Image (cartoon, rainbow, N blue to C red; front, side, top):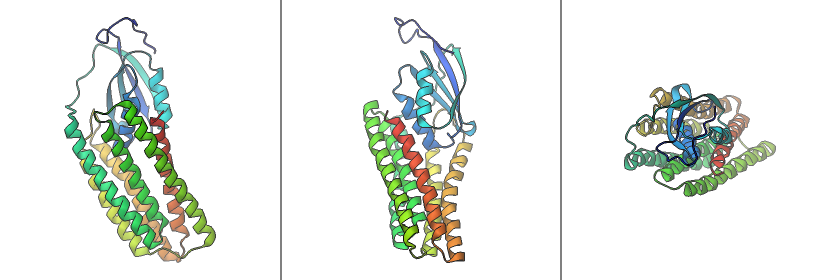
Length: 281
């Protein structure tokens, strides 16, 4: 459905529509922030309402929905238009005070930054590409939270510049990691230290859970508490993959399982970079 309000009408008299999308890959708070930042600068967008537990997004807007759909398609999150309906008004949202929103995002950023440095250092010392890749997954989350902080009260232009810079940085690190995985596979280096892999990955898992508990205070719109557990399960899968690969390394005395885990996580990080770069368009 397309809405074509009078071009001479004031914002108060424009026809307001609610367009609903099912966003298949939007199952965590970080992806909610990506969507918010992508749609933030579009003309006519009045309010975004999220329900992560069912991957639903309601956009209250004026004008045609085509720019909304195109912007969501750029993110590659599998957005599908469900319905567009004219409404009489825009629902009131919860208080979104900038200071209250910044605090949990700052804490989440700090936790992810600390674990990025810790895991990267441990991965290099232990010779584990799985830990190095997991550290970049932490960095990927940290970059999203940093972008979200910049978007709180910031301009659209500033947001897009930061998105472009952080996206290229993340993509560069992922490509470098994949090249290093191939190099180690060809050279055939010794198996990594299993104990370090298990201990550090377990600590990272704890850090992810702590981050999600903090981020639950920053969720807005209609995002349900269950969404935090969906997000937790996704991060647990990454940390768990490193732990499982460590156990297979121990059982086989081969470093190949660690390299495979690292390559898989680097691909996840590269895909996240692609999504962030979509914000800078």
